[in-house]
Amino acid sequence: MGSRVELGFVEAALGWRLGSAQFPSKVGGWPAWLAFRNQLPRVNATYPPEPPPLLPPAPLPARPPRLRSGAALCRVCGCLAPKRCARCRAANYCGRAHQELDWAAGHRRRCRPAQSDTEIPDHGFLFPEYEIVIEPEETESSDSEVEPDGNKAKPDDSPTDGDSQKDPKKHELEAAGGIGEVFEPLDEEQLEAMAKHETLEDKIFQKFKNQIAAEPEQIIRYCRGGGGGPIWVSGENIPEAKDIPNCSCGAKRIFEFQVMPQLLNHLKVDSLEESIDWGTLVVYTCAENCNQGGGYIEEFVWKQDFTADSV
Ligand SMILES: [Zn+2]
Ligand SMILES: [Zn+2]
Ligand SMILES: [Zn+2]
Image (cartoon, rainbow, N blue to C red; front, side, top):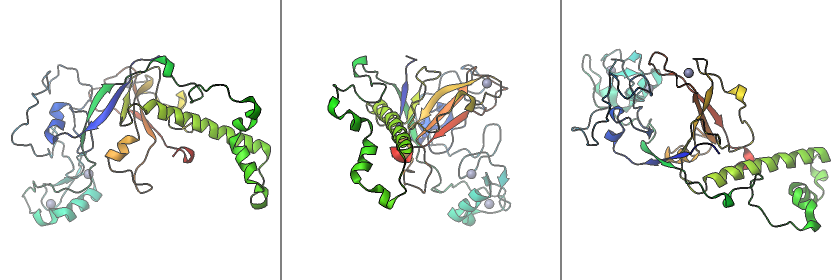
């Protein structure tokens, strides 16, 4: 079913390999801005049709404070910088927060009128930078396929205890005894609904784990328009077709790739509660691959979190 899934993995790489001219697949660090569109035709006015040879340019280029178009980039994050230090008029920022960060990190000492401060300190703001390498996912033969219920097919369950197999939660509660003494007693219907919900959650999460078990280090699953679609970490918050807005050209957006939770470890943001988090990030892009005037075009990402049950 569907086309082949490609998996992405992070690898340490030298900074020069990840510059714009190399058309890098990367994560973290400064943005590697491409010429106004990530989908340039191979023969175009800005870049040669073949990438430059994989030799380190000498000397290592400083991070460009500007795009080729002349637009200034923020010294801290590498994004578009409409603001400028009023004193030296040479340091550019995306906004007040990054100006303050840079000021404290040393621009204060190097800021002189009409003198550019070329030393960019480590603000500790950027994510660690990695190259992303892509490999096709090995598909296993169908005999190890997972049953629709998320478990490997089991031999016949003993018929004598069929009831407790179906409702482990309910029986746990009953076994604990006297829940009514402490809590409001739940009625049968509520218990059933809870058990059903948890069983569904377990199934979906188990399917997710099975699917990535062979390559647990994968950070990206790529399969544009693939029949299988994304794999979900939870049964909650799965988008319906109506939740995915059309591209601004009017065409539908289709599944292109998903970012896996393993990336959080590499970005060093896996500390609970105080950092960004996701179960999976699913990216949908224009089915028509439209090119509206050659600029960057917004795409759509759906964020799904782990549920409390599945952590
Ligand atoms: Zn910035
Ligand atoms: Zn300044
Ligand atoms: Zn489009």
